Image (tube, rainbow, N blue to C red; front, side):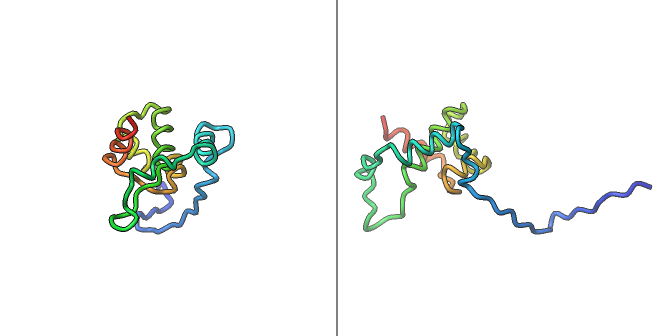
Length: 114
């Protein structure tokens, strides 16, 4: 009779993931990350957010730009697809530091740049 290794979906595991280590030098996502972090002045976005005294904190425009640019480069032009990628794809998670902006936030950000 065949014998199989047992498995248990209730078993908890811890998987340490270094988000920065997912951005391998020489890749498109690493380039997007480096350019936005080091070369682009995002202060132009500051005036759009007047939440310094009231309201919840906004997503960092750097994080949104990174996920949108990589999404567009990978053929994900819809905000729902980019939101899904931020939830499911480790590269998008690395670019957003594990944050998952909703599709409405992504769409509003893109439309505000027009």
